[in-house]
Each structure stands twice: as C-alpha cells, then as structure tokens.
Length: 161
Image 1 (cartoon, rainbow, N blue to C red):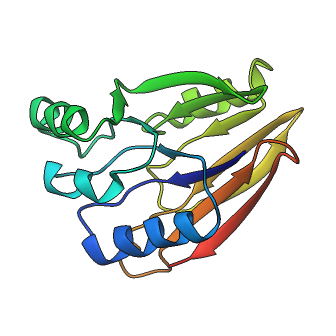
Image 2: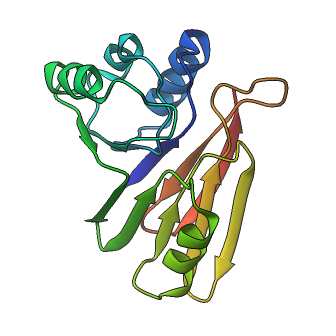
Image 3: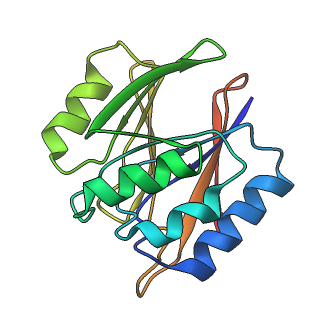
C-alpha cells in the first residue's frame, strides 16, 4: 500500500489541496499527518481518505479539531500514535522533542518513524528503521513538501508542492 505522509500544513489551503491531489493521483491508500494543522477549517480537505493524525505544538483547539475530524470520518490521536499497516510497524509523532524522535528510531520496534515539527525533510535509516520527516506542507519561505511511502518496498519519495 502507498501511504501519503504530510506534516505542518499550518492552514495553507492551496498546498493542502495540492497535496491531496497528489495523493489521489498516486493511488494513496491512507494518509498519516504528523501534526500542526493549526485550525479545524482545513480538516474537510482530507475527506474521502482514511487518515490518522497526531497533534502538533501549534494545534491549540483540540476540542474543535477532534470534532471536525469525527465529522469527516478521520482519526486524530494525542501526541503519539503507533500502528501496523500491511506488516509495516509505524510510529507517528509530531517531533516536538528531538530526543523522543531519535529514541523511537533507535529502539528497533518500528520499520518507519514519521515526525514533523522541524519543517526539514529527513530521510535516513537508523539500524532497520526508516526515519522520515516529510518537511512542511506549508513551506513558509522554503519548499513545501510531502512524502509518499510504499509499505511493500519500504521506500519513500519526497514530492514538492
């Protein structure tokens, strides 16, 4: 299965719309969002996909974010979420504490550790664990990026929005 990986959207409707279009054109089966939606009004843009997300440090209104996620049949978890998709063990964490992100990679319990927060793309192996930060879908004054991840080949692809 191909996964769509996105983080730090920070209310950027144009880039979220572009990301979802790229997910659709690449036959993405599920989206993982590493936090920092910021406002609930962007959540419906992800409708029609299965999505699991975690809160980021800029997600202030948890109550309304949870409500909007439920309205759109999407899932948001606290700061950390773990799952297994097609045999790929995944940890999803916003990345606010770099030591926690690194510990998740070094512990050996996951095939893929996804984080965000830094707005910098990271794609490296730590032992048998792929550490993947898709960068920022907002982009701010740099490139806006997302990632695709194939659970069969375990290979990521970084896409610029």
